[in-house]
Amino acid sequence: MNLLNRLFKIGQSEAHAAVNHLEDPINMTEQGLRDLRRDLDKSLHGLAEVKALAIRARNEGESFRTRASDYESKAVLLLQRAHKGELDSAEADRLAGEALLKKAENEAQAARAATDQEKFEHSAAQMDQNVSSLKSTISQWENELKTLKARVTVSTSTLAINKQLAQLDSSGTVALLERMKEKIAVQEALAESYGEIAQAGKSLDAEIDQALGASGAGKASRDLQALKAKLGYRE
Image (cartoon, rainbow, N blue to C red):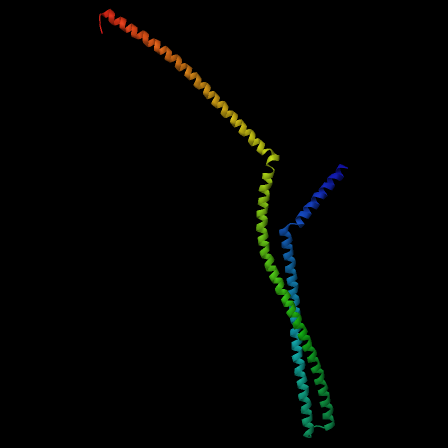
């Protein structure tokens, strides 16, 4: 049972870590930018392909129009040679008719190519707008990412400071400081008390010395007067 509980707690912590990781704004933004860049690469590749199709359609149209013009020129040349008697009229008419059919076929192919070219160019224009929009969005979010990183740095620091301030009472730091303040106050009062006691002791000794000094000086004065009288000195 304990093993199952431990496994459950480990899985739960890993799940929370995964959620926190997924919800990290920097990681999410960077992942979004990577997705946008992949979309941009795909769009650029698709745009290049569509433009290539438009170029191919344009080239094919020019080729078909050139061939149609050539077949018309050949039909004219056949009729001119028949008119000059250089070719049989019936054969010239048959060949000229075939040339005109080829001309019509190439004109139809040229028209189809022109339609395809217009369609591809229209698609390329739309895709070009999408590419420009993607580039603008990527540039915008690259700048947003720089701002987000700066905001995350500030918010993380602020969160750490506020968390420490919020936990001061619970951690006993304030109580400890109060106890130290009280202890210092007690020590200061005790030092002042000893100072007063020391001063009081000194004052008492000074009074005693003063009293003794006064009586000693009086006796010395009397002894001096007696000595002078004995010697016959008068004032």
